[in-house]
Image (cartoon, rainbow, N blue to C red; front, side, top):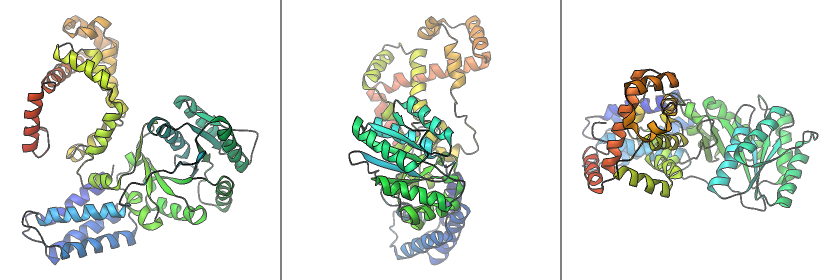
Length: 449
């Protein structure tokens, strides 16, 4: 995400490379490129101007430390201002109450229904809540059906009434149903339109007045840039929402909406959607997003995602197998599936410092592991548990069964052997200490990366 903006920021900071100190001339030249980068990213003009003015004032007022180069100082100041621009700190969703009520708003196609499902999943699995989804889009029958499909998939109940055409009555009935049946959060999915209109605004305002939600969220497609900001402003003037949800952030190479909304509407971004899967929902952390924009990755989020898939007992069992040299293709497949649950592979790679730039222009399929899985599933149970059995004849059979070729099977076999060696080495604390020393000496990167 935000690849174009990251590239342009890096280009802007090159102006200061090799400079001995901050001066009005090199600061002005750098900030000219920064402003251009922001405008190209579809950031609000006023926001871009205020950003560069503030950075200039701070840069010229700084006493440059001898240990910090002008380029590093400018990156530091820009990082701090980007964090401030996007809200400073993360803001949690308010689902307090009996029940807590979350009202969704936004245009048609922004991803409200999908996000409603994601939010239900998030509240259920990470917050220990018992959510109820309420289908209040009376104009699009497919939205009601979609919500029921998502609810079934997540194990979350959905309240709907296709006979009732008044969304206010449906929302009120859903809240009563929640109170009577022990649900502590109600998520109200409302109708959208192709554009802002009076009927839509009156309807969403009526629903809000009737149910008095604890949280009103505005859901918007981040790829629409300044249109997203303008729409947010129109909605906020009518319903005074509490926070913004940016969907499809994984496809946004510019970042205009993420950088402009807080300063224009003065409402925090609370969540970002980064894919179609129900797990593809992240709390919005301004500092982490600033890191990614400036090409520093987002190791904290990467570790958090890994921890969510981490099973302590499974890890202990795996370590025992590795130490006994019993790591097999069943274990290899299990590890792949855990990585898949963490999210889009390209997005994960972008969280590693320096890898976002290295991956530029590299196309990675959403299901990058499907060929590997097909090869492993084409093995017999015995072959999976005893990889040494796999000879030339077996490789030919596996290649045919998986729809691949002998070269791809050989490639996987090599990857498996390399992974096995690496995991064996990492299971030894002494080797891990040596590796950490090497990484420290290489500036945090794996040797040879």
